Image 1 (cartoon, helix red, strand yellow):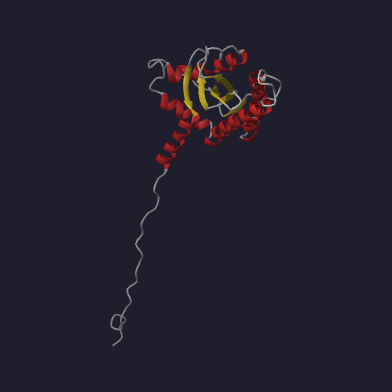
Image 2: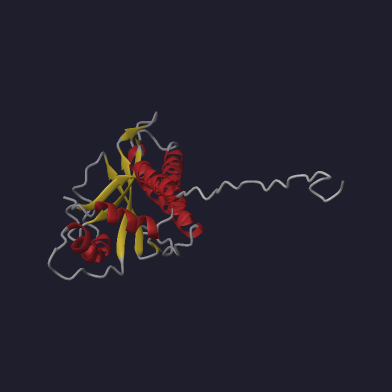
Amino acid sequence: MLSTNVSDLERLIMENIPRDALMAFEDAYFSGDEKGRKRAADFDAGHRPSAAGHNKHFSINETFFDALLVQGAEPSPLKGTKLVVGRMGLFNIARLSVPGHQWANSGRSKTRKKLADQNYAIQNKYVQANLFGEQPVVIHGTIFIIGVMDGLDEDNMSQLTQVMLALPAPNMESWLYISTIADFLKLYDEVDAVAQVDDAKPTLKNITKKQNDNEQGHQ
């Protein structure tokens, strides 16, 4: 359960992950999902679901890699089924696909668990903060970009319907924070609205009174 420091945690994310990057990650997920399903459409109907799973994994890896690269996140090399991991600010960024909001198997990956362990300081500062203890210094953390596969396309292949942003708990059994990217993007708009200050200052135009002959000393 999130503590009252959720707004501070959201601010930490926004300070390290630009709005454009999250939009790029969301677009990459949908693009890779579509590309993978198209690649699998030529398989026999009996093989198609399995083919879609493999093709979507590789296709999304490729589009996610490209999005990280464009955003300057220095992604790890593409290599088989290995996770593609980027870095923005203090956050590692990796992706995770889940079928129909079923999170049970999401913690099996040793690499994901190792990445999640980097959220200990975030957990202790923002989620389980000790009011009387010394606040930990957050020097790194991990964000997962999650694709929820709970739809079916016309070929009966699982289809991406939603992309989320989440900070996994160190034990990978819960989330320190989770939100759809669509909802999280609204926070940037709220920050922009607060930050906008009306700097326009009305100024009065100096009007020089035209002097008549008497005022100029002429008779």
